[in-house]
Length: 409
Image 1 (cartoon, rainbow, N blue to C red):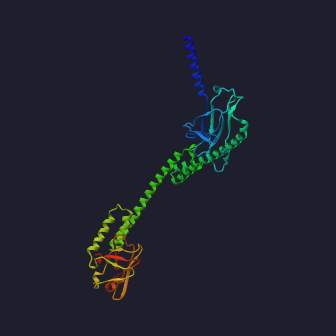
Image 2 (cartoon, one colour; image 1 turned 45 degrees about the vertical axis):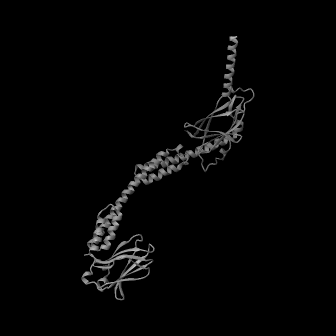
Image 3 (cartoon, rainbow, N blue to C red; image 1 turned 45 degrees about the horizontal axis):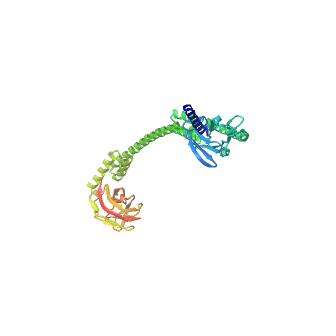
């Protein structure tokens, strides 16, 4: 009885293992490799279709390899694609002839090369399935159906030859541009080197360039050149700014020595804008403004008034003694109440006759601004006994806070 039981257990175990083995062999195993040129392609998409329905999807690993399991006695389409490449399709007919045991079927190795698109090459051939893989009874294994694939393979080989020719031409073009770039860089001709490195990046399609050239190296070189050029430009800019500052400062000091304080203020202000960190212009501007305020000898207006657009406002006074008329200035603290580009005409005269005048521009609208007008720049101010000064806005109202006469000494 124990022998019968032992035999029964062995029989059951054999049936169990046979069932497991059959289950393991119920699928056709495809061991694939995706590459471009000599470079394995990781993260390629492997999509499996059955009756036009996608039933499985995988990605190749870093070395380009992938595996797909297909049930027997079905007809599948496998599409292999990757961003920046033209897809390829293959048909797998997994039907097995009667009498072929599953354990007699070997795994199917598959190598697929993807090509980058080239506008000048007709690659529409790759839109259709390129091959049919099915069971060959003569070799007792799955293989390409050569009777159906011969013409297609010829076309594919011709296309591949055309692509290879194109890639060879691109390689020569790249080699020339790269050598030119390296030479220019060593000669410190950085602008030319940058142009050549950028041309290198344009040789191959952007999406697949890193398969053929060291894109990271090129970009690193371009970044280094940008920094070198940026440093050079910054130094040139600093040098130019220093020269402009020195010129403006020299002219300002010359004007100050001649007591031409309006010109000196403009030039010191210009110098301060060129090099804001320099203290000398700021100190001199403050000094001139203090001198002008300290030397005020006549106040014509010291409370806010608005002078309407295209209307004249006269400020009268007793004629100034001749000894006081040298180096005279008008201090105007005004604000623009109209458009940004309006003007203020300032005139002086005696009685009903105007003797001379000035035009004030660039008036601020958000705050009061100080303007210094050199009266003694006009000879008539020195020769006539002026007894009035007027203002006439054109283009908008003007608000006056202070109007004073002062002198440079």
